[in-house]
Length: 141
Image 1 (tube, rainbow, N blue to C red):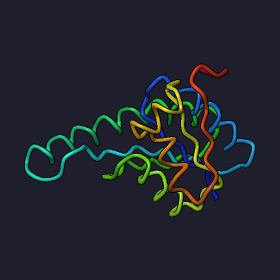
Image 2 (cartoon, rainbow, N blue to C red):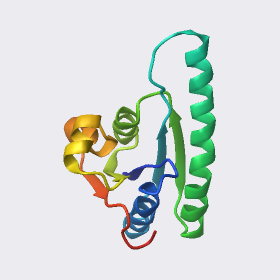
Image 3 (cartoon, helix red, strand yellow):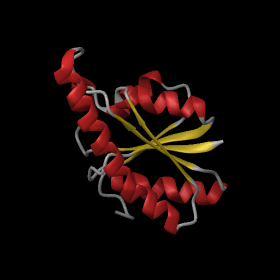
Image 4 (spheres, one colour):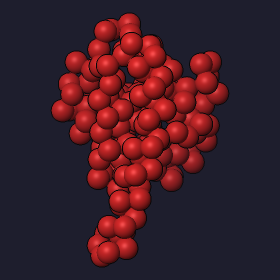
């Protein structure tokens, strides 16, 4: 089993990292750091260039999370996937037999998240595994 974390260096993902590392330590399981790097749109060279740029941003973003996990003695796996974030998290959770998917929230209202399609809201709709939504501004930030 594992703990899967959606991480993008946003303020909302930092408290989620602290919670995910704590869970990984408590259950002695690896932490799978996931970054979904599929840009909107679809085809063409511009799309591919955008996708490469997002993948590079994702690799840079998870470096901080890897350092924190390593400092806590947590084994990590990094996945920068060419998929929308929510689907990337579900796919990684399936591959790594996740106990839980952990994501941060941005502090927006639930209605705004539902209308705009936030990752936590989408995960609650498509995941068959538990989803832990860590509020922005929680301790450990």
